[in-house]
Length: 336
Image (cartoon, rainbow, N blue to C red; front, side, top):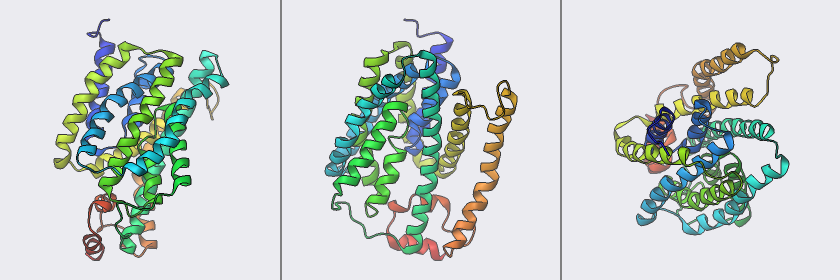
């Protein structure tokens, strides 16, 4: 196996830069890595999904161990999520295999699923911001790091997240995090992240094992990916206190949206008809520009509906990290 080829170096570089983003913000692992490798053209989509899940199992294990040592996960809640997510993560790839054995159809189906998952992941970030905006305006929920577990909805959240990850490798953080925020509003940000990381390890392991059983494991993808992503994640975690994460997270959402639309085109959805690649590329760019211009205006209108100034305090960064602060400090931000 030759790991000093341009392909291997490009995979390692992609893993390194995505790892930095994950370490900085705690979001975007599979959602950034999978489309990055697809657009690099380093392998079939099924092989890329399998490699990404395998690499994620490695670096998420380290994060989960760190949080477990610090006592931040809610283990009972993580257990209910795991009970729902692990079986569905294992079943997801087999469901896709049952639906189609044709390689071309499989390629198109996976790109379509990943494109939809990326748009879903981007929308969950917007939903999370909106929920926190409401919490800021109302003074926040009563802090409760040991809430009464709601088994049925928690299992359903795990099942949805598991199926999404098993098929696409996208969504273990974004989808499950926003659902936990809605089901358990009193849970602190540290508990949310710790619980999500602990449940994510068996989730991605289950999805990786099922994908390996069906598609095999391309070591020429996996090894450079791990070599790049692990130090990138560690570096990002060290830089996190010094870097404005809010701007990066909003940039991630724009990238996810543009990547999702581009993958829908790659999957065979051609609204302008076949052979209009240039027009499709212009559409992807227009989506990015529209998000840069229109999203702040829509956000300002939502703030005004809730009695806040369209722009200014509390700033997006304060609203994003609302659960990390006390209700009193949050209310202070609202009144300033």
